[in-house]
View 1: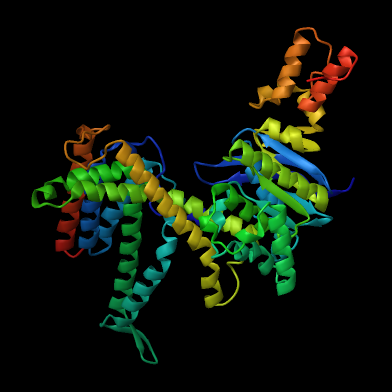
View 2: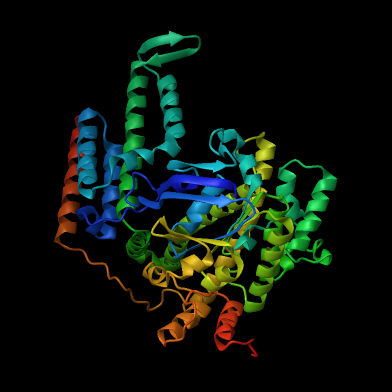
Length: 288
Length: 267
């Protein structure tokens, strides 16, 4: 696979020359491949948010380089806006950034900034709203009359409407109730499936990451500590716990079963896989 | 960009300047300002500058931080200097077109710059070494006597500490909103004045909404804890003046006296 974003030895230091000086990202190198669904996990303060703000050029690295395609994104600082259209970033709690009179106008904000023509903007707004799970009837409402979950969908649609090559979401499901969380993640999965573009999801919920992504990068203390498929990463449960993270609940059950002497793979990470593994041991199909 | 604002920022530390009672520090700053305005000539300015230098040295605040604080008022400094330079009557030095620069003008401009710079540095030293909470606490006690004439001192102090408390929060919030809008291609740096003003809407609307929300939440939280103003309220940290406070006060009084005497002799 071809990398679409390549990060080389990225360093970012906040508050140089003050008593509060501290490196939030220190020597991170990683690649994001075209079309993959990547999960970035790490404990609070591990540098996740700082890292992703570099990927679309919102923060300028203190050291290191970021390549989008083959080009260094800071090669020409005047073109940084184009990078932001190609790498869409949805912030944590994005509902606080809404400002327009109607949902439609708010979703169109990014697309309008790209200088597209009216018809194209309209097509993108409607398609983005559909991907984010917003009905047509909501488009003429004020975003401030919506519920918290709907507001978040409007904010996400606003980024999708720019049709970025890479969509990055920072904890998209934080603070939603279980039903809202499930349906939002389903919407994101569908977007990834149907568009086929690269999606990066930042989270500290292991279960959420396990169920959705193709590949995981684990951050701890401002650096990358692990990278690989969910199976590879979750088979190193001990190390994950050492950096203040955990494995999905299903994996915890499998590990406990292994400890009790049941011979199954301790790194299964979805309910379906665990069921299949248990059924295979019994030599039949699961009935539950 | 916004994070670079240092106005009223507190640098935690444990120097003598940090440990002094906030009331003492407020009074010291007042004495310092009075002395600064009474100073007339190099000798008296030198005395005040020496005191400032010693205070900075003791506080352990980086001189760079003090200089950085001058940046926002650079314009005012230049403006006053130029005005004084051109409009002070006296013995002419240079003269061109309709302007005449006098010897007195050069002097006044020079001392005026010195005075403003030292004024800002001295007051910044106060906010650099005193946490906003301690500062309002000190102000509240110092203004206490005004309660007798029905000035709502406690309420004013509370408003002030809440405002100070929320400045960093709002700056951080503005930063976040700006980043989010920039991620959607908002452009704050180019265009004419009208376009730039319009570009502020996507920042101001969310900022106001969240400020109102915060104010509401804070009011509810205070209500929940039965806050009802200053009547019979006790303090977590009771302010207490110690020997060092009186000693430093004495030193500053001596400085003021010295400046007054020197100024009398035109020094």
